[in-house]
Every structure is written in C-alpha cells, then in structure tokens.
Amino acid sequence: MTETPAQSAIIVSGVVKQFGRFAALRGVSAEFDAGKFHAILGDNGAGKTTLLRALAGLAHPTQGTIRMFGKAPQDSSREIGYMAHPSLLYDEMSGMENLRYFARLYGIAGDERCAEVIRAVGLDPQLTRPVGQYSQGMRQRMSLARAILHNPKLLLLDEPFSNVDVHSAREMVILLKHMRGSGKTIFVVTHQALLLDGVADEFVWMQQGRIVDRTAIPLRAGEAQ
Amino acid sequence: MNSLWAVTVATLVKDIRLEWRSKDALNSMLFFSLLVVVIFVFSFDPLAEESRHIVGGLVWIAFLFAAVVALNQTWARELRNQVLDAYRVSPAPANGLFLAKTLGNFIFVCVLEALMTPLFVIFYNLHVLGPAWQLIPVALLGTWALVVNGTFFAAMSLRTRNREIMLPLLLFPVSIPAVIGMVAGTTAILTGENSAHFYIVLLLTYDVVFTTASLALFKAILHAE
Image (cartoon, rainbow over all chains, first blue to last red; front, side):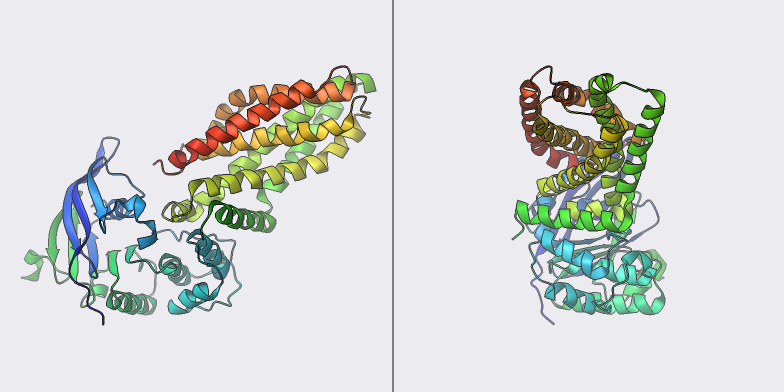
C-alpha cells in the first residue's frame, strides 16, 4: 500500500449554496486529507449530494470557496472522477461504446484503457448489450468504470451502493479499498455506512447543510455509547 | 489529445449512432413535414405560376417547425441519466459539444430536406425559372441559420420547466431575418423575377454573426445551473 503524505487535498471555506430561498449548504468549512477515504453521511436533505456536486464543480457556491489540490474545481477536471446517483451513461449504447466516447473527452485514444477499467469493475468488455438493458448493479459498476477511466486523483461517488445487492456492493467496496491503497482520495456519499466500516478513514456527518461531526468509525459520539 | 476537433468528431459520431438506433428525431421530422405537405396540397390547389410564389414560404415553414422537433430531441438525450454532467466535469471544450450538436442537427435537417423537396416539386408541379443552382446555397445557409440558433436556444431552455414551448418562443423571433432571407431567396429563384444574390449574402452574414455569438456564449450556457 502506498502511503501518501497527509496534505490537504480539498479545502472548503465557508461554502454556502442556496437554491432560491433554500440553503442546501450553510457555511461548510473543512479540510480533507489527500490519499484518504472519506465517507459522507447524513439524512436525506442534509446537503451531501450538493457538497459533492460543489466539489465536482457542477454546483457553484453562492458564497465561499473550494480549492482542490490548490486549484478551483473547474480547473481540476482531469483530477476528478465523478459518479452521480443517475448512471451518466447513454442507455442506447453498450458499455464499451459509452466508455470509448468518454475516453475521447479526456484525450484517451484506443480501447485498451476502456477494456481495462471495465474488467476492473468486474464486467466483460465484450458485452454488446446496451446499458439500458443492464441490471442496476451492472449499471452502477459501469458508472464507476466511467468515473475512473482517466485515472483521477480524486473520486467523488454519490451513493454508489444504492439499489445494488449486498454481494455487488461488497465487491465495489473492495475495489474502492484498492484504489484508496493506490493513493487516491475518495469521497463516498452513502446511507450504508456499515459497508465502509474498516475501509473509510473518516466518516463525515452532515445535518441541515452543515458538517456536524467527523469520526473514525461509522457511529457518532453519542451513538457509540 | 482532446482538441476541439477530436471532441467534436467523437460527439458527432456518438449522436449519429444514437439517432441511427432510435430514429427519434428523423421519424418525427419526416412525419411532421409529410403532414404539412399533404395538408397544404388539400388546402390550396394553386396553378404552377401561383405555386412558384407561395412554395418558398410553405417549404421553409415546414422545415422550420420540423427542425424544432429534432432540436428538442438533441438535448433531451443528454438529460436522460444526467449524461450532460459527465461532459461538464470533463476537460473537453464546451464548443466541441456545441459544434457536434449543430453539425448533427444540420445533417438531420439536410436529410429531411433532401427527402421532402422532391415531394414539394411533384405536388406543386414546380418548374424553376431562375438559376436553380442558387437553391443550394440558400438551402445550406438557411438550414445552418435554423440549426445554429436552434441548438443554442435549445441548450438555453434545457433547464426550464417547459422547454418544448420555450424553444420556439426563443428561436422564432431571432430567426425572422433568416426566414425572410430563405423565403424571399427561394421565391426569387423559383420565379426568376429577382436576383437571389442579396438574400444569399444576408444569410451568409446572419450565419457568421450568430455562429460566432453562439460559440462565444455556449460555455456559460453549458455550465449554468
């Protein structure tokens, strides 16, 4: 396992995100170490997905700043791999066709890398079925393959285990553990905290648009007792 | 290399592949245009001389309305599974997406025109009295005028609630100078009464101005929330 020196990969300073009169993020400030696995937890509407989208550069903070490896998120697109709750894939194309297209967006030529990441997530690159006919678990894996296609330093994953059977979820966790071991910084928004017990380096708890706790186990201080 | 050209070609190939598989846009456009031809044929019974004066308007109205169908389809595809977000987080240039969409729509509408023009000629017993070759620049420049603005405004209305209604509301007023150029240019060529030179120059100028403006503004539209 490669140990990455603990430097702040992401610095979030006073980030507020408002949608009309509703504040999804209410002054989030935090520093997240590089090469660590951060699990973001919280109830529905806590601001987890909004925080992840802000980190990906898809949601622009109403106030505050975000620095990723010293740069703004919009300037860090090569370093970021983003997996959203929807698949971000074209249903009418096969997995390989999808990845081939996204590879071109990152300047990756040829099919070798696409086949490599498809195999890495446990799927068959020869599969010609369109993604629309995949099971939910297969779609989630292919979505993860798209996110890691360009070998990003930072992975932002929004509920990667939702609607996935326990076996597939565990396999995805093992894959993420390997990635964390290779020095990648990983953020996972999830409701299934126990899946990441012993894998995530820290659990970041959100509530009503704020980070309210950061723990090393998937239980908050009060809950541990 | 993820140059503008490489991304444009990759996106265009992907769009043509998706359209070839679904035929959503082409089928709807063809059916709509065919309906317009049939309705107009049964509504009027013009002499050949009268036809030459009115067909320019009928043809372009049919193509304008049919193009709106294709323009809405183009972006609707990117909203399914939020695939557009995958493009937004990539380092690919925004204008690669815009150019590919515009070229794709241009090809689809040109195919429609190539299929529908013989029907107009047969049903309206048309004989061109002016220089027939000038219909080609009028058709190409007119079609580009429709699709370049249409693609831009369709992207702009993407996140609005009633985007199918918003597109014509935004597109038609802006297209008035181009529609005048197309209709008057076509009529001038069909009747041979005037030169179409002025209208060709008008369409060329319109295309240059609106293509430049769209390319300059598209990045802001793509990354808007």
